Image 1 (cartoon, rainbow, N blue to C red):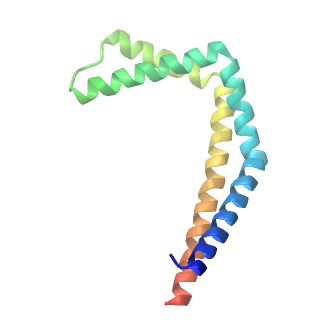
Image 2: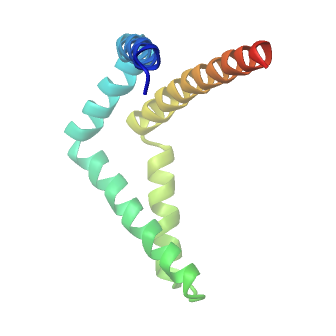
Image 3: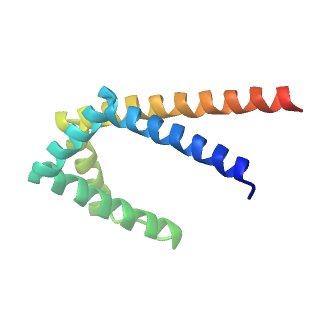
Length: 123
């Protein structure tokens, strides 16, 4: 790679690092991290999510092998889903996660538009 190319790559990576730092310092990211820590500290909620993930994995395995879930498994899955929907900490986490995902989608769109504009003007 030519020196000028290396310098340009270095400059772009520095800008990417600054963007990453800005995202990491954003209130949306900090809120998501804070709620994630609360989830980790809440043993009951953490166990609820782990139980649901395990059951969801079993359902996926059954679906893949064309097996039917038992009535008890379906009942348990509905119960866990209801408990998840009623858990304020999980709801808060899901809202924060959605807000952060919206920010990242905006970042991606802005980058794509900037790259598109740059490419159109150079061609």
